[in-house]
Amino acid sequence: MLKGWKHLFVKTTTDATKAGKEEATDAYSFPVSNPIASTSGNTGFTPAPVHNEAVNEVIEVYEAGLESINMPGYDFYEFYKSISTTGAEGAHSYQLAFNMARSLDKTVTVQKLLSDAEFYISKINEVHGQYVNQGQAKLQSLEQQKQAEKGKLQSEIDQHVQRIAQLRAELQELEGAVNQKKGLLSKIDEGFNPQEKNIREKLQANDAAREASIGKLNKVRNGIATYIKL
Image (cartoon, rainbow, N blue to C red; front, side):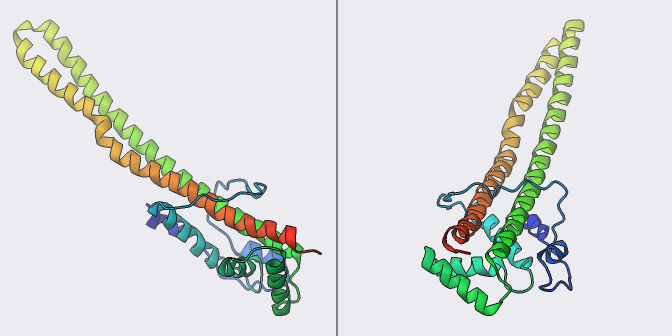
């Protein structure tokens, strides 16, 4: 399912320049119909260690997606990559990175970096919402299939039970059919469990990847707000 998710990050052609944040933001959009509200207010988040392969795969999708919508010029994404690459923390590191950013682009300001951070965080949230919707839709489809099969088999069981009452001569044959179909009915959940388990794991991986990605972005954003003085 993850392979199909990667197309959700889309970078459209744009002639946007450094003229303004709003113009660049409009040019870089995701095909999202039900965006999730930004969780950028969750400060102090420290992502838990991620070991699950599925979580790592979704994180890679998020990182590639952020790269694909990187706006023209120097913005929060370049600052984020700079901080993430060095792994350094603290006022000195953030101030040094900010000074370097200013040397590359005189239009860079703290306000612009914070505004850009909100843009990238919102895109992670939007794509996460798409992943959730896809996973829930698949689970719903499986549930409908399961209930349809259960209903069909239960209906057949009821018909056979009624015939047993009406036609005692066929009792032995019909009882065998009932037992067989009850056996099938009892195994329906077992048959669907692997698919449900797989989808739920991917949904959990999606949640964990979102939290990890948002946490990293928030960490840099909060660092800017904390360590860079206007």
